[in-house]
Image 1 (tube, rainbow, N blue to C red):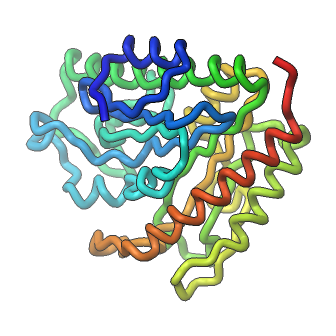
Image 2 (cartoon, helix red, strand yellow; image 1 turned 120 degrees about the horizontal axis):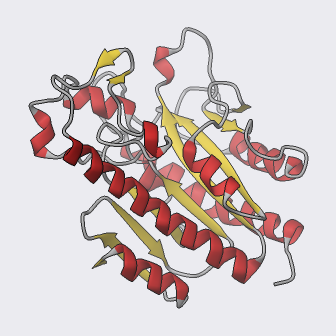
Length: 278
């Protein structure tokens, strides 16, 4: 893996080079093993939290972990193009508009003992903006090369906090063209319905059941592309113990192995259906 500046990443994408790199500030990494018409992203995978913020933060490390999406980066790591965040959403949230990316309160609790300085906020928003500079470059390059692309926006959620039965998988489709992409949405749902995991829960996929797909990543990619679909995909945290933080590697690896196969299969069908002459 290389360590590259944002400018160097953008140059490599423009030249259609293959590379695997982390940003010089370690905020996120990008991997392009091959230029293909699909991208996998894990924007809430990160747990990095600057030491200078520790004493000022009223949320514990466990509180932060609980609201992050641990292991989602690992789940997509077998795919050819990945974007994986390394900073915690508690410093800045990549799935929120930059004007709202820094929390004052988080999940009903004050986040900071004293307000962040202007410098701290500016540094966080710079990292947010740099991430999306790379996202935009990928959108432009892949649509230039292939005409149509699909982004798999992978998240997880805490199923035990719900007081009703919730699905293992959820697709948020509120902010995409559901008429145009109806077959692609349905095919992805059917794939997730049949994924096999070593868990006791019945595996099924809901659409707009627990989340509707209101995240900034989806909205940004959709509004800055011509022929790109974003599938906001949530998996409940059946792959860990929400209450203790213990990860179940067997389940994580099972998801990773099946995502590697099924995402590529779904993306191939998507491209056949939406291919444009470029």
